[in-house]
Length: 537
Ligand SMILES: [Zn+2]
Image (tube, rainbow, N blue to C red; front, side, top):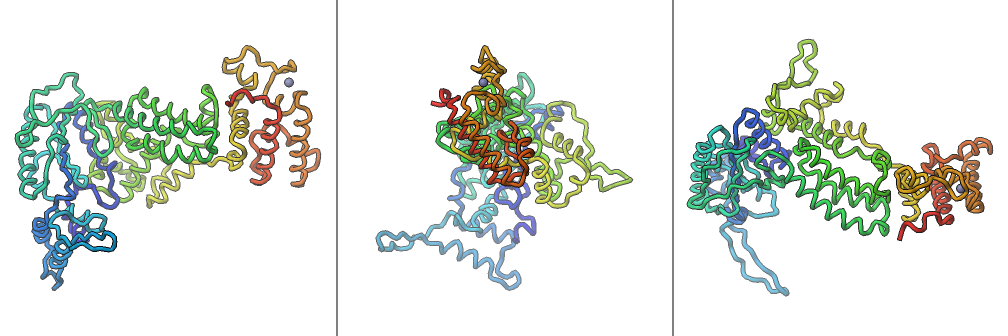
């Protein structure tokens, strides 16, 4: 494209830019703020509310700008400008109701939406808002924000106000509306009592100084903490998980898992490479939601061991996922050498004279632990610790596949099998959180670990040794023996294999069908014994 090839679109624009994202811009803004705080500077930010900017792009103005960016008829003898002119001017709107077609109404503003060119033309239109602005300015489509750092908040506000004046004049000239009530300023400061003796103004309106602002989906807080963001995403995630939990016994384990992974966890993980530096206490809020999800999926009880739960679903925990996400995000920036504004945020590669393909970073000294824990220094640190062969991977796709392969295991498919209620009872035996007396005794909710027969009621005792439910037990064990013998094992070998592990987990050397059969037999036995009938209502 003409605009990208010739770098005509501001590099501070992240919206609609292939390969760039909200998160990239947020990383950059966050890094800028934390670096300033590390120098004991404050940062004053102003987030502008451009209202319905998509609809207000003004055709004559856009054509004027296209011309200025070199879209002309005489270039290579082409009729590029005329083409754009007719593309924009002759876009009539016609309504068809009951077969009757209205007359065409021509509109002279708004770029065609839902087209490939629309967003790009919008970027062209808004591009020169950055001209002459003294503060740092960032665009994401029409989301425009400006930042000024320093020690004297009053003089910072003066710069911001002078830039807001320029932006207001620009907006007036190009017929774009800035809504002062949707415009917010935030003073990012680590000081207990920063000087807020200033007023941010847009035209004659006083702009609200806020403690928090949601920018591109992430709550930024004046004190630099992630408390507010985590609280917001936790509320949303909890509500969604609640809807799923209501159907805990009506849906299959697989359905619940898919719902959680597609509908709840992404809500909690938006911005996770940034909020990873949050207080443990705040992160624990998210861990607890995932714990609740693990219990909903498996049917496990409250005090179930967390390690067993994670092993049951084979997921890396949230903090491990954040770590992997950070490595992947950094890897993408390094491998693609893009976006440039983030490449510049990274420290320089450590040059090792003996092996310059070492691909590790020189970590710059940071004054505050608070900065060290943030995305850029921390992800660079994680990167340096990777095995050299991973750091040497030259494609982002390959890097992602590699990270995934070494961290994701899959759940044996037969774990998903069977009637939901019996599947839950079976799973609870596996997770050592069943209603067997030993399990209850171990977590302190039963006075005894003994079976009614007088032996300790272990899982093994219940499934194999106890004298009660003998008919059902013999039936189960006989049919499982048969499966093993049919596979070619001798009676003796089959008898050796027939232990509690086989009944709880199946075995990797058996086929899916064979494992399913074993699970069916065990679950039928669990149903027949009625041992757990009281617990699910
Ligand atoms: Zn017994």
